[in-house]
Image (tube, rainbow, N blue to C red; front, side):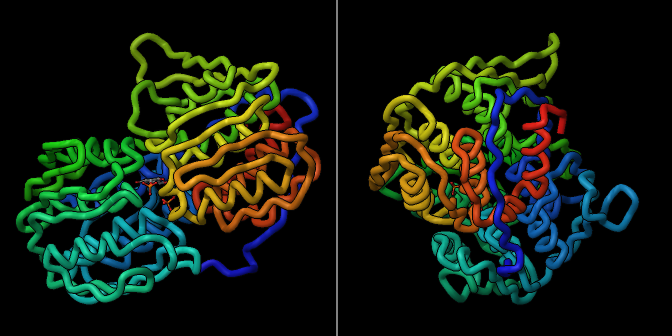
Length: 440
Ligand SMILES: O=C(O)C1=C[C@@H](OP(=O)(O)O)[C@@H](O)[C@H](O)C1
Ligand SMILES: C=C(OP(=O)(O)O)C(=O)O
């Protein structure tokens, strides 16, 4: 659990001149945590290279180890900065699982606990105890698991196998409910036949595509009979050596820095083709007036993304349902644009690290925007902006949104910059290096 000692204030630096920098970003949280889960469920050891090491991924490592998986670094024992990991699956047994504030741990690990022998308990940060969770637990119950509780803290007792089969769920609050079940489903006796029955579509489509692609890489037979149903056949999960792409969502604050200062930021190792939702920042930044180029050598599977900022940012009208994770960055850009923006399709952000719609409305309002909070989005009318305390609400992306605003507005004081450790522990030094014009 996170304690108050970890909370630290940070005066967001102003960019007096346009930012020009090359910013390599660490591995993707979503790819890392899926790769670790799949490796723990596989039939032999696998290497996962270029992993993100951060609070969320270290919690996943801790959870899988506690359940019986061996995870080592290149030299044997796992060091805190090792990013090339050897994962050796073992028989799963009950354990105490700390979820922190990580949605991927809360939603992806309970199915493994249902496959384990013995009882596992789950708990996390105070903010995690209010995040939606019942959907996963009800689904596991209906697939044969013994579960107590409806949100953190809860427990799952397993007997070493799970029946599986057909299950209906309402996954409108999070795509992670679907991904979590699908990742483990090949190991259920009958696989899974999962149907989303909610009134709204499942958000974060690219994250589900990511799950499906990684399952298929591991030889799992997975079908999508309709837009809102998925079928996983029972069978082995093959061990796959994987190289994790950079975290494109974590790249977005740096790319935003180019956009808001009229500078240029280059992010190396940007994949030509990816399931990461962060890739959509390219279209968003173009729509707001930036020039965006992916420089690649012929036939290469990755290149360098180059964003060059415009003289002034155009406002945006966009449905962000598929890319909700990018909302704090995009909302910060909208606050610095030269007209009103409307962001829709993001009701599910109320169940993220914090209620992000309320948090963005409050903090953007406090620095001078006129913000209207709608049931499923935000209307942002930029005003003359001024310095103010910026609350992060323990949310890494709220903290980095404050950093973006601070580039153009003196006196933005982020109250909990260390919340960035959730997915980017080196954030402040990367930001400082970017402003100094160097390669971070
Ligand atoms: O599966 C994943 O790795 C994620 C799915 C998304 O969750 P939601 O569908 O709850 O938004 C995203 O916002 C989160 O950061 C990561
Ligand atoms: C919603 C997010 O995280 P989580 O994986 O904890 O849901 C996020 O990183 O924006």
